[in-house]
Structures are given as structure tokens and as C-alpha cells.
Length: 263
Length: 328
Image (tube, rainbow over all chains, first blue to last red; front, side, top):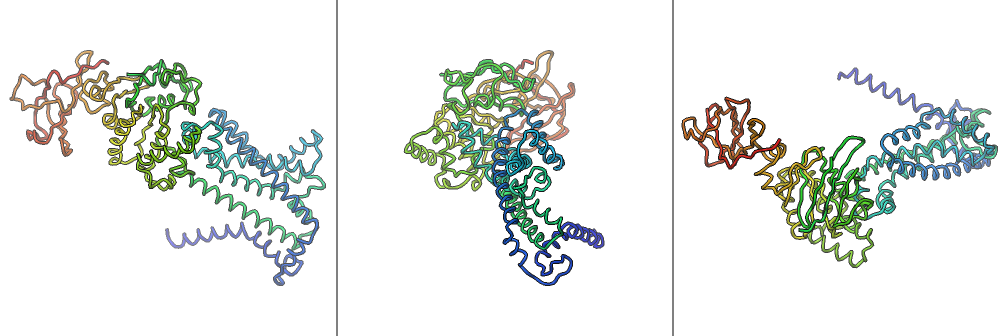
């Protein structure tokens, strides 16, 4: 390849990265800005972060977000793991049908899912609040857990489980001593993934949240309606940092897992 | 001899297609039986049915006289050595070997005693704290064997256990496995597609093709007196001459070559040498026949070379006792 073409291509890659990350970088940068106005840089400060932690409403929203994320990700992980394990016992045809059905929530528009859940809850006269948020979050994050774990199980194959049974382990003992220890990093990765999804979700939460269950993304949205303040920047920066950290940890776990199984 | 495993009219269908048509087989206690055949011949399926990982569509399998239908794999008194060894990656060598004894709730002291014994026996004592990942292919194979025999099974099932190893290692492990089997007196049911391996180790070989057992006999019998065309061509090299409805097989080492004018009473056919391949201990000669559309393979051993060259015209012959009539 000649130098001109190489330069053009690398220039293009850089332009793409700038396009993707510049808005986020600016948002983060202005969370450290002295001035209230988001357009002029007037010096470095932590004060917006300090005022954030002194703000009761913010802390309450944070509390809601973390509680809901914890409960829903634990439930989603349990259900997703069980579903992935159960899938192995279906015949190939049924497995692909069920797989497709469970995969669907990942691709259908979130707004449809939010709306349909809202309709469901109002039909059943369930009061909107933390419980409905948890149920909704379990619904959309469980498929992710299942996909992660099903992929791991498929990689693992059935030989190790057969070996365990051959050596006298009942199906339960096989699950406990062989299958679960081998997929545990993926289970943890699935948990972190659903925790992140729950923490970040806005659209679906918007439909199913009640008056006392405002989560962080919902709170940020509320603030923005009154103009973007540096506090919003600070809050978003924290949220992004948490998300990136969790995703990186989940990905590292997933990779470590796939290495440990292939001998 | 006492029968340890009996298969009675075992059948296996996979989604409508017949993999194994009704098949019966009895395996004697303490014997080394090999299921030999090309890939897809049903040998692994047969082994997996004995182990309990596949259910026969029809028929019954007996272990020591007791029917095995409805007996799950974890209650069958036999163990399997898997093709890829299937060692538990999250356990050490020691933990892998102890797994079976723990599952069967063998008392701790007995577990230790048997562990030490089998570690000695398989020369694994120094590797006991390693994980499978830290072992070579041959060492992993040893662990797989140790993990199975520590349970004192009545029968050991082996699914191409040497398939993943290189040629030299395979050769030495063949001998080791054979000795292990003789010393322990355990019945071995061994699956392979490698005829040399089958010849080297087995008491009896069951040659399988398309789900059927074509012939079951000792290695020498299979080699010297193949009963079907498939067996004659699958095991070793062979020349198949057709005469009318029957086929006659003559091994390349039994083919004699004569100059056209020498001992004409022993000539059966004539042809021309087209190719010669030197293999060290022998030379392979390919002879294109004049009267028939076929090429005959003859082996010429070092020392009794007549100095044939490509292009030479030769007559071929063989002793009547060296030909085998095959049923088709």
C-alpha cells in the first residue's frame, strides 16, 4: 500500500474516533469547569461533584438505581443461567426456536418493550414503582445473560459433563462439581452485564417508573429539561465511568473463561 | 469364557435414518476387543450405547448378565477414556483421579490408598499437583487412563484414546496400554479407525462397516482370512481378482514375480511394471496387467530383490494356499 492511501485510511479512523468520543469527552471536560455555562472554560474545579453528593434528590436517585440494578441483575442472572442450562436438553430444532424467541427482546425497539410492559402492568393493576422497574429490567437483561452463558456452554461441549457422569456423578453432582465451576466466570460476566444495563436504562424505565422510583437516568432527563447544568455533566461522567469499568471487567472475565476451558 | 457384555439385537436410529441395524455381540471377560472401522461406521455410537450416553432404539445390552436399559451412565460399572480425554480443567491431576471415588463415597483412607497405587502405576506421582493445562498430550492421556482405572471398573471403554497423539508416542503407548490391560485383567472395548493400532493390541477385532460387524476374529484371522470384500480391502493392502461371481484376494507379499521365460507353470497373469516405491524395508511394485483392467501390487523385501526395473515385463503368480475367496 502506498503512503498516501495509508495516511488517508488512518486519518479516516481517527476522524471516526473523534466523531464517536468528542461529545462524551466534552461532556466530561465541562463537569470540571468553574463556570456554570457549558460553553466557556474558566478553570478546573471539583465543586459540581461535591454539590452532587450533597444533593438529596441525586442521592435518592442513585440509591434507587443501585437497588434496582442489584435486585434485577441477581434475578436476571439466576433466571438466565437456568434457562441456558435448560436449553441444552432441548432437541436441536426446539433449541433454535427457543433461542430465537429469547434473543428477540435484544433486538426489538426498547420503546415497544417499555410500552408493552406499561400496558401489561396497567391491565394487571400493578402499581408502578420499584417492583415494576425490577420486573422490566429483569425482562430485558435476562436474554443477555442467557446468550453469554449459552455461548460458554456451547464452547464447553458435553464431553466434560459426560466424563463426570461416567465417573459416577448424578446430574446434580455434575452441575455442582463440573458445570457451574466451569461457567462461573461467565455467570459473573452476565451479572455485571445486566447490572450495567439496568443502571443505564432510560427508555423502558421511563414507562414503568412510579413517582417514588426515579432512577439516575430519569433524574438526569428531568434536570436537562431545566437546562444542562455542570451537575448533570458530573453525574453523567460518573455513570459513564461506572459503566465502562463494569463492561471491561465483564469482558475480561469472559475472555479468561474461554481460555480456561480450551485446554 | 464368561461373557461380560452382551448386545442383543441392538439398533440405533438417528432422526429416522438407521445408523446401526440390529447387531449382536458378546464380549468375553478380560479380553481386549477392538471396534475397527472407517469414520461414520457406527463404532463410536456403539461404544456410547454401552456407556449409556446414547439409548438404543431397540434391543438390550447386558453387563455381567444384568440388563442396562434404564440404568443411567453414572450407575454403570464401567468407565470410559474419552477421545479428547475430557479432563476437568479446574482440578489438579490428583483431584481428577479422585473424582470418581468421591462420587461413589468411597471412604477417605481407601481413596488415598487407591490414588497412591494408581499414581505409581501410571508414573504420575510427580505431576499430581499440576492442572491438565500444564501437562503434555501423553501425560494428559495417562491421567485420563488413571482416572478411569482407579475405580476398578469391570469394563474400560476407550474411544480413540491415542488419536490426538503423534506417531512415535502412539506406538509406545499402544504397548503400554496392552500391558496395562493384561496386568489389570480388565475387559477393554477399544474404538479406533487405525487398523495397525487394532492389530497391535487386540485379542479380537470387530471390523465394522455401515453399522454392521463384517467380521469378528483374531487379528491374524482377520488379516489372513478376511471374509468379505470390505474386510479384505480395509485391513492392509490387497489385490482383488474377480472371476465370475466370486472375488479372490491375494496379499501383496504373497504375489510372486517371474521373468516371462522362467517357471511358466507357475504364471497366472502377465503385465508390465509401471511404478516402484522404495520404503526402506521393502519395495512396492505396481504391475499393470495385459489381459485385465487392473494394477497389481507386489511387495519385494530387501535381500530377495531380483533387480526389477520400471518397464520390465513380468509374470505374476501365487501359491493356492495364499488366496482367499471372498463372499460379496
